[in-house]
Image (cartoon, rainbow, N blue to C red):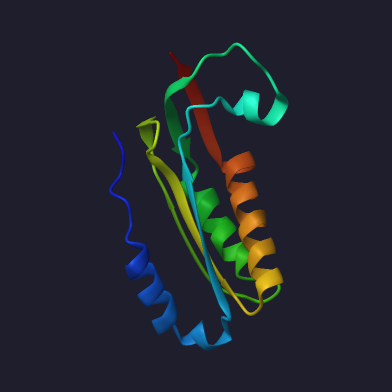
Amino acid sequence: MSRPEPSMDAWLKEAKADPRAKECGMLLVHNGIVRVTPKAQVREGVQGLGEVSEIDFSYDAAGVAAAEAEALTWPGVAWVRTWLNEGTLKVGDSIMYVMIGADIRPNCIEALQKLVGKIKTELVTETEHYY
């Protein structure tokens, strides 16, 4: 079961209407999706696992909310929004969306990478299932 995905058009409108929008020179979106190649193969070169058929995905909602709040304290960051899916997800399903608004490109890119990294390494549980 997966959650309905948010509209990036709606998020962009919301971000641009926010009182802090005038501080943002860039908005970046990350859309993580379930891929067929196992994570261990991509990251560590482990072979022989087969192809991913689906993943079981869950997350710490309070931890994600705290991570969003923390991100707003990082250099230049003025706007943050996250959405995480849950349940059993198939290849091609969205795992998460993260949008960051910041003053300049380097701050925006760094913040997006840092927030997505924190979510993926500390706040989610993913179990891959293979064909």
